[in-house]
Image (cartoon, rainbow, N blue to C red; front, side):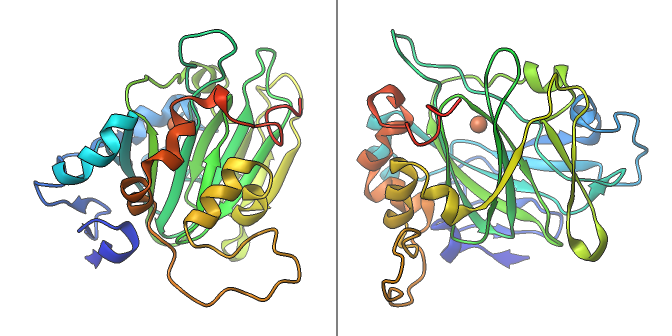
Length: 288
Ligand SMILES: [Fe+2]
């Protein structure tokens, strides 16, 4: 058991199994579960034996007490928490299936972005662009507790748990769309796989089912945040040290603001999740 209240901004505890204990006023206690059987289409080895974990991750969707919803629901936002157990499946680190998002209706739109925040553990976010003939650029963004990552429009995303313990992560997203899993199932995962390596260091290998080798840029969450205006703004709003501060003195130490609290206290700041084409993404999605 572990108390996540301070880091999550909601009164949650994590059980040894990786499942969360959630007060009824906060949301449904029963998660959607992704089992090894569900995940076979996305694995490097779809015939992996059952020696790894049988349940790989738990998704708790649409959390938040009614009083908080009054603040963010008018903005069309939804808050979720996902827990990835530690371990590997036939050597491949536990990960999510991976998906793309659709775009809002309307001319000139780009697909819905997403914001992740790490509550406990470490995350590797494998982001790849959504070109119809296969991605041409991809990032492996490494994030630690308190850090936030903006998934830009038109980028598919997989989350990997590279750590020895559970990875608990939050996300804000537009409330109504359905994710698109087909491209990841067709190519059996993202453009790279991450396997357990010696000394706890992951080993990345390209997925041979992609039509070309996609270079993978490995960045810290701070480096990735610096690439686009929305990333920089969210980083500052989370009270994280400014990634572009150069030689400026470090800010006074203070705990980062939980991603949940940021959305409740300042939902307007997340409006880019709902109307992405109205915002500047040129640091990322213009580079194709
Ligand atoms: Fe997503």
